[in-house]
Length: 235
Ligand SMILES: *Cc1c(COP(=O)(O)O)cnc(C)c1O
Image (cartoon, rainbow, N blue to C red; front, side, top):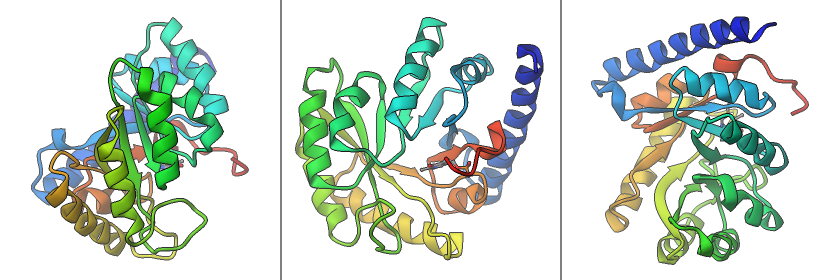
C-alpha cells in the first residue's frame, strides 16, 4: 500500500471513530469536545503516527517501551509531536526511558512504580502526567490497583513534585458488562476527585466498548483496532 492509500484508509477510519464518539456524546448529553481520542498505535509503524498526526490526531498510546521509544523519536524527527500516552504494564527498569518521551503514563498501579517514576522524572522541565490504573474486578495479574491500593497510589503520585495526578484509567474486565464496569470506575473517579480535585481524567473505553465508556463519563478513549486495523494476536 502506498502512503497515499494508507492515509485515505486512516482518514476514513478516523472519521468513523470520531462519528461514534460524537454520537455517543450526543446520546449522553455531553459536548463532543469533552472526550479526547487516544489513537493506540502499538504494533503499527511510526509512519502511521505521522499520518494520524497530519489528520489531526493529538494523542497516541503505546504499551511497550522498546517499540515506543524509537517510534516517538522517528515521529519527532518528521515533525509529528502528538502527546504520547504510555498505557502498558511498566517495569521499573524502563521508567528512565519512558519519562524521556511520554507525556502521560496511564498505567501506574503501585506505590513502588510511582516512586520510581517520580525519581526518573525529577529532571523533566514539566511534571509527568500520571493516571492510576484501576483493577475494576479486583483481580491481580492483568495490571491495576485493586481496592484501597488505589488511594495509596493516588496519594503517592499527588505527593511527588515531578508527577501530576491526572485521574484514573481502566480496561473493562472481559467477563463484565461494560456498563457495569465503567459505572464502577466512574464512582471511584468521583471519590478520587473529592480529595484530589484536579484528578478529573477518566481513561476508559476501547474499540469494542467506547459507547459505554462515554455514557459513564470517560474523558479519554483509547482506540486501536477500529482506527488502525487488526493487530497480530500474539501482541
Ligand atoms: C491495545 C489497547 C487498547 C486499544 O484496544 P483496541 O481494542 O484495539 O481498541 C486500549 N487500551 C489498552 C490498555 C491497550 O493495551
